[in-house]
Image: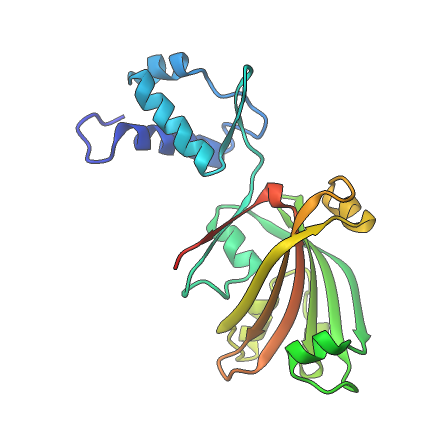
Length: 238
């Protein structure tokens, strides 16, 4: 701790604890030292410790349990949405958060789209759509079930590694994800979603839908993503 730094002591302490979490020295479920113990170890006041913990709670790194103590929270995908990173992929967002993304391919099929999918992909009713369903994970832990719909011209995806980043595949074909319209609302876990995400059936989840276009304003995909909100933190910068 640097006592004469322009960075407040509580911020320094918060950053120190966050670093220990990110390095795996403190793991999910571990109990954090008490205010008195932290105060003694870092030679700062109890008020400084309290403010540091409040900041960690606010940012989702720790959880307070009344009468028991403060514990390290489960890792969450931390996504910041602004005009510059609106169209970053799941893989890119995860790595920026210091987390390792992975995917389990659940299904790949050609379907005849319903009216909603036709509308979002800007296609006719007779045009087949490539439907890809994946279970997305962070550090091996399931976070979301992702259903993507692609127009026929994206059939090159079938020749690619579908457990990796499809955005990287797009860029290899000189298609740059440049704009997205995203909506977020509440839904409730179906029996299958609960099984895949390791939650209770009918547990509240986040439903995120997204229509993404390329640099030429052509639709790349329309997605529906069901997210375990206990493992996801969304920050919107306007």
